[in-house]
Image (tube, rainbow, N blue to C red; front, top):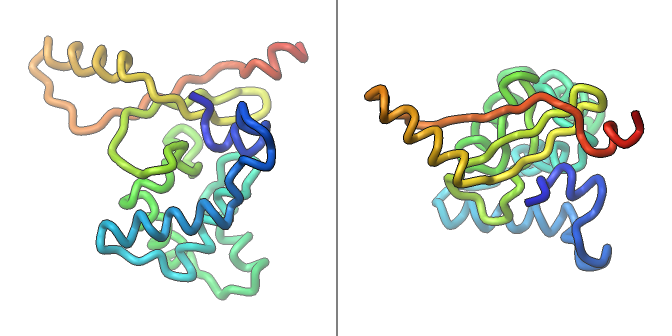
Length: 166
């Protein structure tokens, strides 16, 4: 499965005119929030748009700078509240190692086992969803009596483009 960040950057395995626009993704996110009884406010929508349009993962402070460039008077707590909402709604993911945020690759936000491939050279983050990895982690935890609530798998390495360029 191709991650959304990678999908936006390189294009999906389909014709370009079939690719959803950022605006269409924002509309789908607003509908998903409404189904959960939540509201994608103008600020939350703007934060999500900035993350969707980013070339790669964005830190909170990079996001804050971009918010200020749009003319919004945003403070760190404002940005963090918007990010917290988007995380709760499963519209974005936090890449722990980078302390940065990327859009969720799933078009219909839900709880899913996601793994992240992080290129050390170019910083590209690709989201994959491999249930076998999630089940293997669950089984390993069960063997030692641990009951995981959530697992974030982040794999450092080199993406295909950087490996090919080397």
